[in-house]
Length: 316
Image 1 (cartoon, helix red, strand yellow):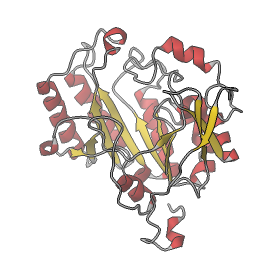
Image 2 (spheres, rainbow, N blue to C red):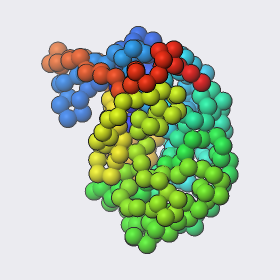
Image 3 (tube, rainbow, N blue to C red):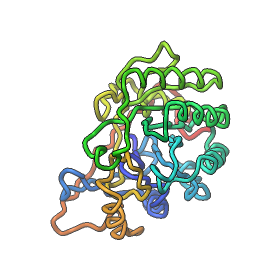
């Protein structure tokens, strides 16, 4: 089973003490976002978790203690660094600071375990196609050789964006093609493997690979382990990822990104954050009398026949 720590919120940036304690105590509780009275318990042990997937826009808070997880578990890291400033990503560090942090993360876990996410790609009067390509080239020049790949996707035009980002300029097919061509050429120039995720459209003629951001092939190659062949069902249209179990909670991220799908509003996230208790097994609040707790199914995807047992342990 794959544990995902960052699809619903930036757990690393805002909840590192809680996350470390959950792995120390060996279990976590996750509330079902659709059925709030249903809570699932997951064991957080090397025997029950094949790999821990991280996704964050700032790994600085966990760097000093990350070894407490990486020494026990197979891991993989997605680091989102985009062209946007505080006007769109209020709580996210600057590009230069983010690059410095990524380079420090690489020293701890190795480039093979790090995916640089440049997404979502969106257009405004400030963030034009030209700005994206110039900023992407600067980033690529700094990150080449320090990441395993780059993943990008175009912004999804879901309903609340019209309220949260009235300045957004809808991407035309021509815009997407121009951006894909430019990103592909720049990635090729710096020998960075580039791929899409959650984006419809075939851009292979620009050197862009269609794939998921969390696939058993990527996780296996990053950790030197082998998984059984398993269908990647994804989470939405255009997604090619392997299933994982997220332990975070929606409406809790304080980054305040205007394009965010995981928060109803920045105000709601701030309100919910007040309910966080680092000592609770739930990221948000505590168990209630009306809650029903069930044990999560944790089946391994590892192909334990493919490698000698000693090679199925952590290796760097």
